[in-house]
Length: 205
Ligand code: ADP
Ligand code: MG
Image 1 (tube, rainbow, N blue to C red):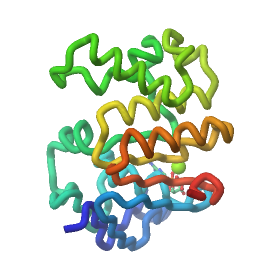
Image 2 (cartoon, rainbow, N blue to C red):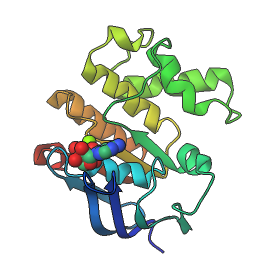
Image 3 (spheres, rainbow, N blue to C red):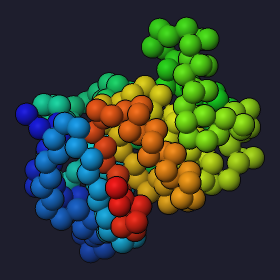
Image 4 (cartoon, rainbow, N blue to C red):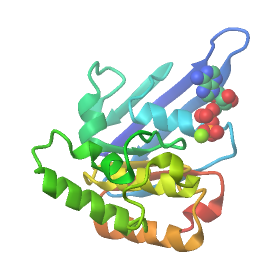
């Protein structure tokens, strides 16, 4: 069984006169452990597709099967979001009044892990993305690229089954990009990765 199967997906915003056909009949199958890149210009429907995969929005028609479950029919997607899919959004949704370390720790809360272990794990991942010296800073004191890296560390902290990156490395320099790729290889070698970008250079690996 494939990990992800999208069948005949349509997403039409504002049906009627001003409708936007953001997704127009997409079929896509992704196997366990695959690394898939989707490239397209701004407004081509990339974020819409990923939001549907993550259960953040429902398609107008079609099905999305993840790990054997049709998520378009599920009412409660909290398990999918918390256990299976690590999301890194274009806008990284960090919590402004928490420092970098606490932001990365959030997904571990409620897992039964001890506070000390959670801190260690979060610290380790911040170091992996090159932010070891910025752990106590709040997001608004950091650059866009640094905030993206916090979001990346946060998405890796629970070793998700699926990692979705929406234009996530667009604002980081080449050296940092290499660090992040290394973290992906070492931390989550078996995770299925879906990355979307505007430029082919972002996905050249
Ligand atoms: P991309 O991520 O490739 O830049 P999006 O998926 O964000 O593209 O958007 C695809 C199209 O759908 C665009 O034309 C955009 O304006 C439109 N769109 C996205 N979200 C909404 C929304 N919530 N309501 C109406 N139109 C939307
Ligand atoms: Mg987008």
